[in-house]
Image (tube, rainbow, N blue to C red):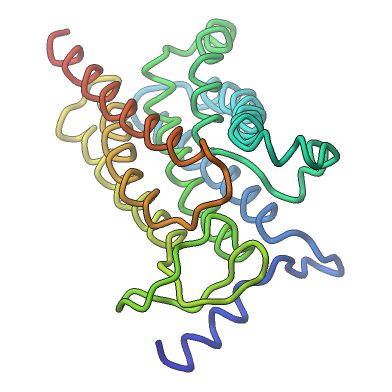
Length: 256
């Protein structure tokens, strides 16, 4: 890694960034931007595929709040020993601590009730929500990089970049956050293209589930262990489950 690249990442990777006259947590800012950009892109995609932009947007706003709660809940469950040692961390949300899969699972579980109220079909919404999710991941993972969460394993291989972990320890690491962000962009392109190749409701959602679940398995193995006994095992199990669920959905659509 050359000096110019090293200087770039040292400037980029800061736990706080200046917004106007304020210092705000970089992860929180990028999470907000990811949510807004994701909803905007997902609503446009859903409308282009024949859905109601207003109803998809309303559904998404409710289910993003549900997803954020689910993300926090799964993180707490898989890191329960840490919270037993320091219970006050339960309420310090700005310290970080979220698991994407918890948000996805709770949002999918809650969506039938929400969509019944907004009048949006399940597959209609989740095709659009796949775009929301993937755009959000692509942007939010930059926030993870800046803060040092989800840091990669130390390595001396050719992919190494000098990066911090959440404790501020700078080492040559696998750039796991950038790899996941890039993967999300690639999966977004594949999933949206799937609608052109196979224009049925649910095709985008099935492609996103299969591709993200499959990509997350090797990505998970590049991450630095976070001290939890269960986090990696749970994430790998859910990743495999997504691939299976996506395949089952694709097969059912083919027979529909």
